[in-house]
Length: 327
Image (cartoon, rainbow, N blue to C red; front, side, top):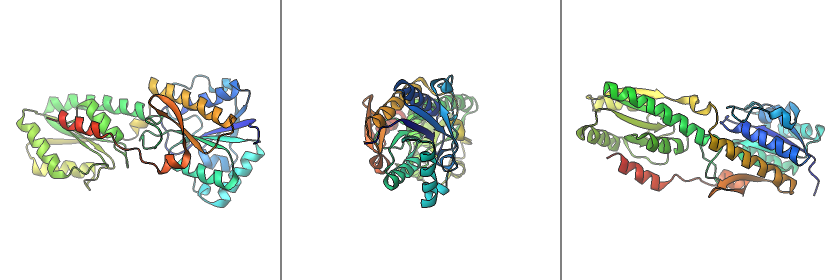
C-alpha cells in the first residue's frame, strides 16, 4: 500500500450549493493530517489540461457560505476517451498527486470508477447534486438548499396566485428524480405534484383541480418536476388545463437554475464538512473506490459503483401524505 502524501480535490458536473464547503473540508482535513492538497480547476477537463493549484488551509478562507464552486466545473468529452484519461493520469503523476476526491454526481462518479479500474488510482466520491438521485446517501450536497429555495419561491408565487385567483404551474429541477418536486410541493402546500417516478395521468390532475375548485379553492399551485412522465412539458400542461378547465386563469413559472444558486443552508454546510473529513480519512486509511454519504444521520461509505447503479427510491409515505394534503 502506497503512502498518501498528496490529495487532489475537484468538482465536476452540475454545481450545487455546499460544494465550496466540501472543498474547504477536504483541504483543511489534509492540513490537519499534514498531507498536501491540490485543487483541480474545471473538473476532468482541467485535470487533462494540468490546471492544478496547491491549496492550504488559508486558501479556503471565507468560502463555506458561498454557492457554486471556486474550482469551477465543466463537462469533458476528452475524459470519455482512453487517451484523455491517460493525459489525466499523467497530469496527476506530474504533480505528485497520490489520491483524488471527486465532488459531483453519477456522471462524475462513473468517470472516477473507470479511471480507478484503468490506473488503480485511489478515488473517493462526495455526492454533490441538487437532484438527490444518488444511492447510498439520504442527502446529497445542495439538495436541502435547493428545496428551501424552491419552497421560498413557491410561497411567493402563491401570494400572487391567491390575489388573482390563478392556477400556477411551477416547474422545479429533477429530470430523472422527483425529490425536489415532492418535498417542495408538500412543504409549500401544492394542490398537485407531478414527478417522474409516478405517472399520475392528465385526467387525475384535472379531476383533482376540479375537486379543489368545488371545495372552494379559488387558486391552486401545481408543482411539476422537469422530468414528469405525463408526456407534456409544463407549458403544454398549462394549455391543456386551460382548454379543459376554462374557469382557471393559468400561469407558468419555471424556477430553473435559481435552485442551484445561493448560499448553502446550514444543513448542507455541516454535511459537506462531515463528508469532506470522512473522504480524506478513508484515503489515508488506504481505502478507495468509495462514496461517502449520510444514513440515519451517520456518515457511511458505499461502493462507488453501487452508488451509481443503485436506486434512491422516492418516499412512498410522503406520496401518501401528499394525496391526503390535497383534499
